[in-house]
Amino acid sequence: MTREEIIATYGVELNAIERFHKTGLVTPKRMEDGTLVYSDADGEMFQRLLLLEKMGLSENDFIGLRSGEKTLEALLQRQINRLEDGCLGKEICRGILEEGADLHRFDAKKYLAQMGTDATEHIFSFNRSFRNQVFRPWRRYFARGVDASIYCLLWEAFLGYVCHVNLSDEGFLLEVVGIVMTTVMMILIEPLLLNRFGTTFGKWIFGLRIEKADESPISYAEGLKRTWVIVGKGYGYYIPIYSLVRLYKSYKLCKTKEMQPWDEGFAYTIKDTKWYRVAACIVLNVIVIIIAIVLILAQLLPPNRGDITVEQFAENYNYYCKYIEANEGWYMDENGKLTEEDSDGTASTDILDEEDPMIEINSDGTLSVNVPAEERPSFKYEMEGGYLTGVSFLYEVENKDHWTNIESTEGFLIALAFGCADSELTDFVSDMKSVIMKMITDEEFDFTVGSSRYFCDVEREGYDDHSFMTPMEGVQRAYYKMEFSVTKVK
Image (tube, rainbow, N blue to C red; front, side):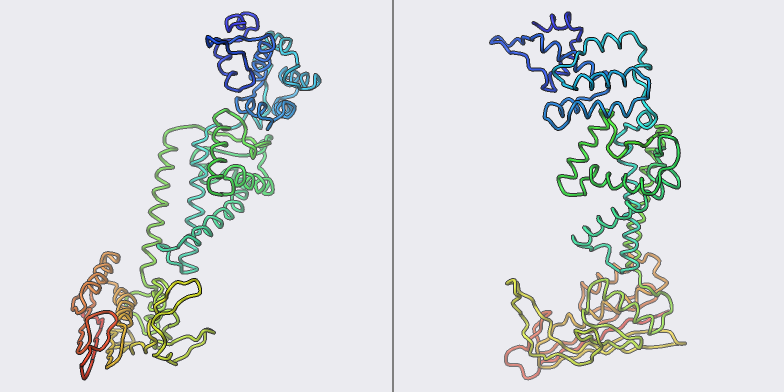
């Protein structure tokens, strides 16, 4: 039979024939001239597929039937669970099950005839948990994205201000830990919000609400199970590639108006789809980004600002040592004295052997450059009324190899811990950047920013002009001196 004969004999429209061809469940014979010839079995299969489509089965269901991933019995049982008792659609599903639920055998013609005599609302009366579903994938996705960004922001705040981690340089491992922790927060917090309010912050913005079919709140345990299924079947446990596959499959389910596996038994409703909800989502995400930037920039501020004591200076100094990962193994005590820690974490003023090798071969074959264990500069403090007015040091080296980054690092740390504590820095980030850039650019300098003067004078004799200095060959005396200070001028 030709397509026209199939349409006339079995009552299947042309666009339905084209749709069902894509499922692979109908395989007509193709002639040498390219025309398709259908058998009576093909016509009957068209009728079965048409009936099942009217019953609510989707293209994905048909593809699943063809591949063997789904069974007709399971799909019919799913529809029975979704339909109200007493409606014709539910009775037809049960009738097909009684016939054996064989896709190639049940009599679709009689069921199609039954459907032709009843109103559509009588044929398909879905129960509330299925009737109230939101098949808008992008609104659902961005609502969850808003929630995720809030959880991420909370984690970043904890990481930066409780654990004192540099948020601008977290590294791959901390990023992975961040994904795990924000997921844990979502799993634990979302069920509580759904139980108490029936929505989350992101869902509230988009007018989304989740409750039981009887309009009662879902329990915490039910919400916990639902969120865990979302992590697995919705996000693929955030496993690369697999996560994208799961997101795409969830998107396809939503587009074909199929219930997501985690929404079974729940009523998911949307208040409206007004434009201002999308605008609110955009504004909120911008606010979250701004807060994240502020969190990062706020970490640049020292813990103590304004007029500070030596003890507060020491706290600022140790904060920046950890923040920029400088002076590992050293810390400043409350009296402003640099102290070295032994490997067991106890304080020690012993200086390591200066003959330690400069280059060390690691077990993995890489090289490490060891800074010679030289004594750190001794700081001098100027006080007035119990508060610091200046911090300085004088560092001298004579007739030996020397890394100048020892005293240079101390200069930077003083500039950050004392100079940047200046309360007159109106644009902290810009002013601090100006100070650091001048110190990096010039070996010697004398400038004022805010109410602080930054001064450095270097004297070098018999040394080459490099960060690692060695006495020049043939010189009688090699001498190096750095005088550094940050003082208040107002």
